[in-house]
Length: 269
Length: 297
Image: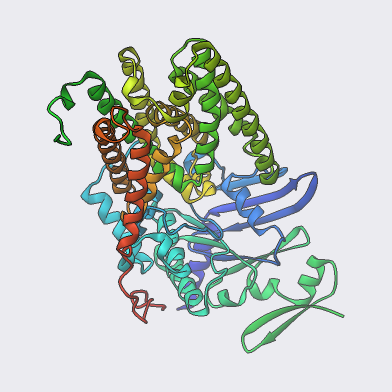
């Protein structure tokens, strides 16, 4: 890239409005302040990881963005505007650890169809166009092969792909995923990360994904939102994940150790 | 010597009414039952049936048609269950158990008083085990209308119910009022249980609700086919049950027909067991290269 081109890209990014902004969000649950001073934003096509230990409030944060939980303070903005039902349709969502009964009479294609019009009344009117869109969404995540299988009978990784296709079919600008890598074997984990990385790059979908381990994401993650001790630190991974930064966030000594391109966060002495 | 389909079978008024009401009941129970099973609410179905018993026996005591008793008690119970539904699971189990026990106790009292009034056990039998051959023609329109209303409501909610069964958070994030949908569904379930209580009795009504849908869910894999198969299984069991019950007048003890409910429930069980004879279809064997279509770049 020439110097001039690099400058143009930087200028474009600077003027490009933020897709999602959390402005000074605080959350109280059951009289307890679980999150405070949460401020970060993300742009089109960016891959952001919400990382933190179990119980740190990652799911809570996603639920606030989805409008499932009312924050005690602060604002959530999409394209610079407060979230309303219209801008909410720009968010795709993959919830955490769904347990789907093998008896559930839903094929992979039915689940994806519900992503298109599952909130509407009546039956879905079958059409060529609807079928094509469902199949395109399944192909996008490499799940076309088991379109006609019952979701409850698919493996964890396969179900995760189907749920991503379900979220993707409404053409969201932002995809929220709650612990999509939990309980997956290493191979499925890598494949799901690769699928998501490709969606961010090729379809310019902003991805916000929560995980308790950042290592599977290091290759694709543009930014990190590190949640601990009721607060967050956000920015490029290398700037956020440092011993000083995380020590400040946790409020006690934490060491960040890098071993063979992997990052370990360990409690200090 | 006689034939299963006696010449007079379809000319008899009560039999025709039974076949008509039986079909409505079976279709309603079959379709609504599919959602009951996938939402894991068969216990709610049982609870509604128990409370409906109280309503049915109470209605009989005051001289009303028992369908109205089933319906009123069922809807009231549905509202109550929804009211306590969000509380702690364990507390809910215990509370439900105590309430259901009390409801059946009241039913026992009402039925006993009914026996004193009429000096027969007809009321008990009708409420508990059904009365499809003695449905008074003037309640038939109400039965049909209730069934059709419940079916239309559930048909309208099909996609929303499927989405919220998959994940209530997913549905809520899409703007579905999950709580209201659950309430409306529970009301439709109460209607369906009341109808089944008229046909095969309050005690057995859940058999028609759960049996055909459980059978259908084992042999179909998409929602539309599951509902169709469940409704058809229910209608088949009900109609064959009616024909056999009519025929059983010639069976020992001669001159006393066997209860329809017995045949319907037995046929439902046979249908369910048949799905175990052949192993349900499995997925095509998985290739060792599961992610072959996805190129991790």
